[in-house]
Image 1: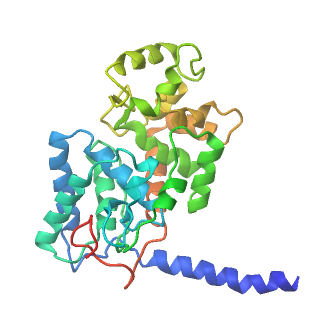
Image 2: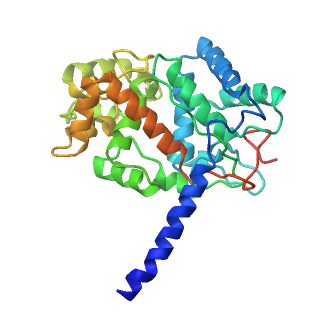
Length: 320
């Protein structure tokens, strides 16, 4: 009992510390120092989409992979340099792209508000406009993150969810970073309603001698055809509305047309708490949109650097 009582003030202290960090993020953070930052970011993302229909999905993937490793601090953007071993060497970051879009946003913002807006906040804002410019519902983005002066390759190796993992492993990785292992997991997986995947991340499900029973056979035949040019061929994550941010990802799962194994397990794992959430989101676009918005805020609040911690990088790929 005595040891339990001793833990209470410690627990309260930890809770207040986490709360105080999160409370420093606010949607009005740049209202006086860079009031047009949102419109600047939106304009660059819109321009990027004119020549690259994957631009939005690339930005969300960068934000996701950033937040899952030591919080949303822009560390995923850092290249190898003196004192930095980049997180880009992790298997989960293999083939990750979109850095040119981040560079373009950073340049546009620096031209108007030099040394003010962090790369971490650019990822958060860019993800929001990636969704709204693909006909999805937006959300109010808390801002005020600063950029890390470190990277964590081991963290990227161990903490990023994999397309080959089962539901138990995926849930564990969400819990480990402080996200809900049911609603946040299912909602954020819904970002696969747009974008593309290389065949190498799902072609193990296409083995004709031992096909994945949770993959629709007609869809599997189509995928084998699409992947004939090679394992680095890109295929739409959502075969129905590939460039629109909607809830068709979940109706695809109901039809056994989830592209990645890590998508389909949300529904195919018998008795899992994720099953009812997938069905709810499939039946209600508004429920998915609201849940996705909240889960993006939850993810964006993971361990941000604020105040005088970190820095505001002038080049998102390199330390100042």
